[in-house]
Length: 293
Image (tube, rainbow, N blue to C red):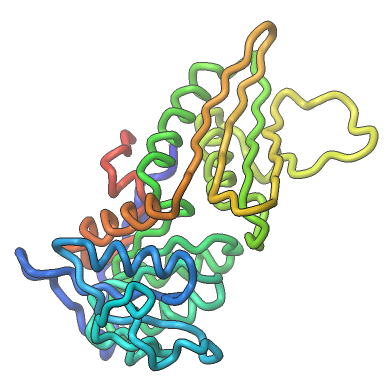
């Protein structure tokens, strides 16, 4: 499975103010992309939670919601205005939940690092260089980085790991994913994570063995390849299937998300996990206690 969380030395940052969470108090949570579909789901989940409180709401400067109450879409007043000022939006926050775009997330992380604010990142589409920047930031603050915060998806990843180890020979492996028409990256971060889990379980290199498109005369399938197919259309929240195709049988492990609420609830579990963490890079296997090595 994935590597053990990054072990990082504690490095003080001038001006950083760590915000320790007091037992029994509310987790003070800011949301980036507060007016998007995922942002609304997160705010609704925070408002319904017994132990989390909305402490900040960020959006892009051009958003028509700037200055409005972040919970106005629920018909309630949270007392938290939507702002494009990242420092103002994080002023009272202990943790930022960010499901935006890579460039925006990295800009938010710079301020998190300055202010000692932890981060739960569900953004996908990072380049290798951007991932290294996140790893460097985790030297100073605690971060949960996961392409999918769903508890079910992460249990599915564990099942895929076990299946890959058991079906190491004689089975061709394909990852098929489907998302709504608005998704901008492909394959999805979750599909790539599934590929990484499979590759690590089998001792393969996804950069070398991953096949991301087929067209024309491709020749016979390389037995070591891990194929990917991406579907975009309608309002599909997120479907992922890993196919192990052998001779005379095939095994399919599938997860289908019907609502973004599952991502929101997983994100709040990540917030709670970070309560006693000061520094380091973690993923949902750490949050859910699924890591075995």
